[in-house]
Length: 183
Image (cartoon, rainbow, N blue to C red; front, side, top):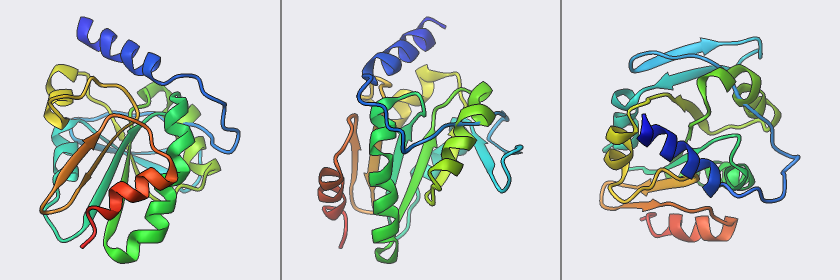
């Protein structure tokens, strides 16, 4: 429990309150063992909710694509600020075999009130899932042994290479990193 509180504090504190981004919105609510799909009052928005056992295969896909996995939350200002960059990557590189997965670490109680409205307002086209697993002692080091748990965090990988980034990106920085993975 102490670790959970520490991780949440680190995450909140690491997401400095930079300029608020009025272009981007907010989230939703649910939970299950590995995956749960929840419908809400937001039309056409269903959120798949995963624990680590359900998420693990999604962040370790073995195929010929480049995968970009971004861990974020609607309450994290740097996460919200860089969200359009991931959407641009999804749009501009999908024909080159790039898949973007946005893993929301919003709290389950905020799925309907913040996450789903955020997805709708920003018309997110990338796949968005909610991650709900309270065993941070297990999943943080499983995702990356050096990860403090701070947001934003990103994994870019393909069949040959994997890189973890515990930082935010500019559009140019994200594209530069992505291009190292394109064949």
